[in-house]
View 1 (cartoon, rainbow over the protein chains, first blue to last red):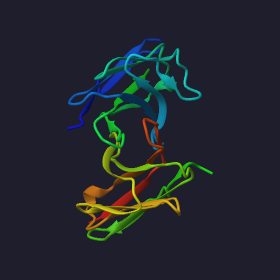
View 2 (cartoon, each protein chain N blue to C red; view 1 turned 45 degrees about the horizontal axis):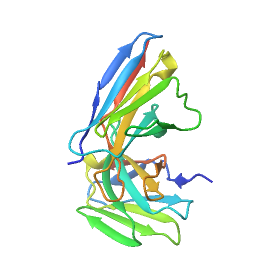
View 3 (cartoon, chains in turn blue, purple; view 1 turned 30 degrees about the vertical axis):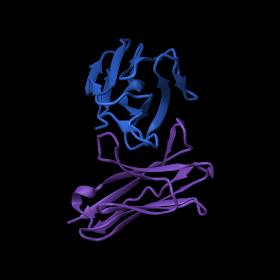
View 4 (cartoon, rainbow over the protein chains, first blue to last red; view 1 turned 60 degrees about the vertical axis):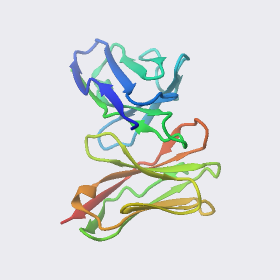
Length: 116
Length: 111
């Protein structure tokens, strides 16, 4: 149980385009989903927290107009990187809670974004 | 002071040895403590969590928590080369609060 999927697993796009990443909890209803970014050899950086049906809460320094988060259902959250630039190239990982009793976060496999 | 601190390593142990990974945290309100394993290029995988003082065992893994000292550790018995990864410590203040992650300790198990 507690399986989280992400799609796509990797994407290459041109500078200025927008990219949408989907995060799904496959076998449980996720009360909360989280989006992280991780640069090479760096630690996880929380970008935002989202709850179904409400606006996402962004961490300080994360541009909410650039990183659009939609949490339309208890099993699906999407992150859209708008007008992507090379500096947005990173490993984007989502996680979800709702399965465990202690709010354990279960991570998706991640999406590697490369912006040319 | 960083909220969750871990030695970045690498921690090198021979195959079959016990690997000891340590983590300290600054917020005394922290309630749940998690250990994740992250292989290079992959996302974190939950190994185990602990919320009460003392030890919690799961197979080759033992988590230890000392809230008075604000210290949590992970012991890996009979270490295998496949255990080579970065181990992330994370703390949660309870409820639906976010996790605060340490920067991770790289473990290298040599055959």
